[in-house]
Image (cartoon, rainbow, N blue to C red):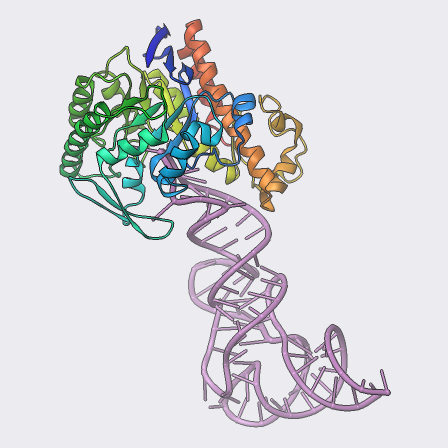
Length: 376
RNA sequence: GGGGGUGCGCUACAGUUGGAGAGGUAGGUUGGACUGUAAAUCCAAUGUUUCGGCUGAGUAGGUUCGAAUCCUACCACCCCCA
């Protein structure tokens, strides 16, 4: 994998770059739609490319391992072939499930014992096994197996967890180096910075991760409920230490404003379930602000959902119609809303990239920040 | 025309076999939440109020210390017979 910085913003640490993976180029900053189970919920692959302009999507090791199972994916020839998507894919290692399935898992030095949310059966993920599965899934970028700590998190626990994540990283790297890709193209392993909301831990972790000299670095353990100031503060601490010439991936972020602020702090790649999940729950993101489509006030608003949207469905259908679809639980409502939000998210980062190249990112960010955060 | 059954809150369904309940469940409605997806999910409110109460189990009476419950009449709906 190769990363080239094309332009930098004079007033912030934002950069515009381009990452080359086995399945194509990713222009950064970039947002990755989340496709946990081999699909970005409600969105067809053709819409991902033709409408949303997604250049990379995310899959999840834990979910794909449970269903359909790695055997099926292997026999399909890898996840790309299985889902008919020939652009880049990144897989999360299952580290987030260590956090989100708390109560259904046990963490030990050796690894994590999960109870399946599908049928309650027990499964064990070690760092080595997480790499093996991700080799079989065949994503272009694969993530180290980590523990995503909750918020709030006591210092002692955060420190112990961070060190374990570091030890797990060594095991991931070793396994990665002693195995080969299954499908004839290179995969890239990304380590993950942890350290909760503690500056010294974040510094320590970022330094450790930087020393590994990996082609891409990720920041985890944020956007788990901490105040935005902490999210930005920790991100800044970390981006100051991670190598400048390698892409930085801020995992699980975030709201449109989180993304713009983080771009200003030197983040290149994002993923988040918010645009897709919230779309299904009736929340729309636009340049003019946030719309709760379920609110009564849209019931007789026959104006376009968003006349400025790059998604034809948002220009062609009215708010009243979309509200109706969502209120009655029609699938098309979730499709139109998901297509809208993801199109907006990609337009947001693509515009940020243009503004960085034009040298006017910071002014532009300050200007749009006011409007995108308001509730309509 | 005769016989039987059932009637409460926005709706439905349960339940209440003389000691009340502005109760249950589901749905609807109206808000809210959601950040590397256990999520087409979850939470709250939903008679009225000056927050102390007030009104309330189809309507009107009656029996009773006390009635959603028992009695009478009427009304509505459902079923059966003609």
